[in-house]
Length: 231
Image 1: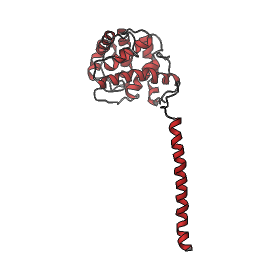
Image 2 (image 1 turned 90 degrees about the horizontal axis):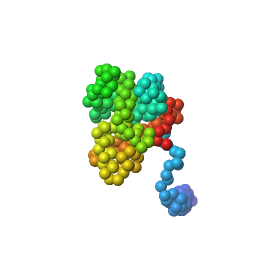
Image 3 (image 1 turned 90 degrees about the vertical axis):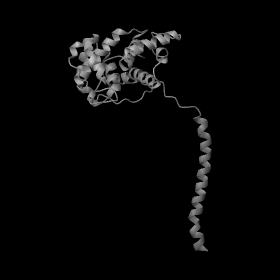
Image 4 (image 1 turned 45 degrees about the vertical axis):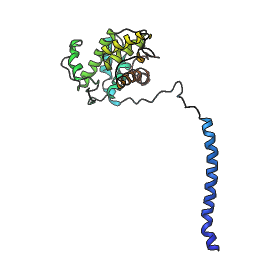
């Protein structure tokens, strides 16, 4: 009998411990939904962590020089750095379905760009130095084509046009106005109205929002020149 009892003593103790663990687990399980019944919202000052690629610093001086020449000050430096971050994470060899290089120009746009930026010379989206000059020049041109209710709105329209085309920005603004929204405001107005394909809307709106509300503040925090335009 001793041998028989000894053989089962350990399993019985383990079973008892398991029952107790399950009992307390049920108690905790009942309590946890009460404490966390509502989804946890991020803190008001929380922001996703952005890792600034080391390669970006290779082109920072060039970006500052180009921005200074096109915009007369360095305010947009962090903003355009954030844009390049969104486009390629500063990878000169970045390739997507339709675009190439660090600034992700389509071949058609790269070839057309000399019409508004003739000093860029022959288009070469695979050349990171050309790409830095081109993205600044194209942004400056687009920025001059649009207006907005605020500096934030104007830059939102500029970036939307860079991503999806100036024609679509004009159509989205007309549609927003026809439906009672303010065509001079982006967030909550024009960004909520479009006749584009759903995937194109999502890509375009995420592009603008991530640059202005996530990446630009991160680059400024990392010491790049600029100021947050959409506070």
